Amino acid sequence: MKSAHRRHDISDRVWQLLEPRLPGREGAWGGKARDNRLFINAVFWILRTGAPWRDLPPDYGDWKNTHRRFCRWRDKGIWESLLEQRVTEPDYEWLMIDASHIKVHPHAAGAKGGNQDMAITKGGLNSKIHLAVDAHGMPLRVVITAGTTADCTQASTLIDGLDAGHLLADRGYDTDAIVDKAAAQQMNVVIPPKKNRIQPRGYDKALYRLRHLVENAFLHLKRWRGIATRYAKNTDSFLAAVQIRCMALWAAIL
Image (cartoon, rainbow, N blue to C red; front, side, top):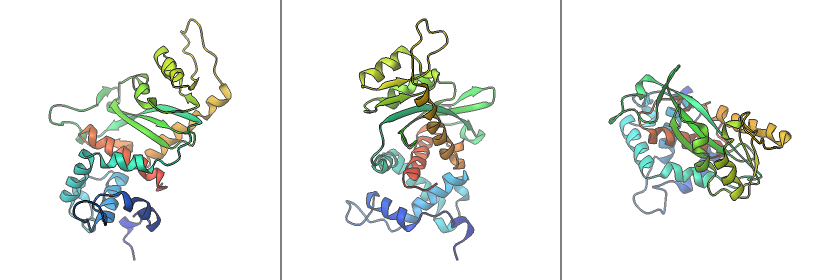
C-alpha cells in the first residue's frame, strides 16, 4: 500500500511522457540514471508541499543529493528544456499575458550578494510572476521579477517571436511600445485603453472577456504551495520551480 505522502507520485502515463526526454535515460550520452522517476517525484513533492528540502521523506532519497541534482539541472537549463518539449501544439489564436504577486517567505531572503528579485511592498517582500498563455490558458513563457516591477515592462519578452492572432491583456499593458510590437508581429491588440489616453483605441470587448483564462492559469500554478509562496533564495531556483509546475500542467498533473 502506498504511503500517504506518495499519493501524488506521477502515474505510469505521465512517466512515459517524461522519461524519453530526461538526462540519464537508456541510450543517452553519459551514465544511466536508475532513479530518474524517484527524483522527479521528490522534486514534485517539495514544490507541491512547499516543505524545506531537509524535510524530504527519506524514501525519496537523500535530500542533499536531490537538492544538488535539482540545482544542476537548473544550471544546465534542463527544466526549461523539458517545459519547451512539453509545450505541444499550443493554440495561438489568442495570446494572453498577465502578472501575479508572490509572497516571499522570510527564509528566502538573504541570498549571497543581496536579495534577488524581491521588493518591499505594504505586505512585505514580494516577487512577481509574469506569464504568457495560449488560447486554452496553457503556460508558454515565464519571467520572474521583483514585486514592484511594472507588468508592462516584461510584455516584450513574453510575446517576442510568437505568432498569435490576438494579444489579450489588461489596461496596464496599454503602452505605445507594446501596441506597436504586437502590430509588428501581426497580432490584433485586445487591450482596454488607459483613461488618460488622448485618443482612446477601440477593442473587442467580447473577446476581452476571455482574458480570465490567464488568471485561471495563475490559480492552477498556485495550487502547488512552493509556487504560491516563494521559498527559494535564488531567482533561478524559483524560475525553475515555476517552469516545473508549467511542465506538470502540460503533462496534465493538476
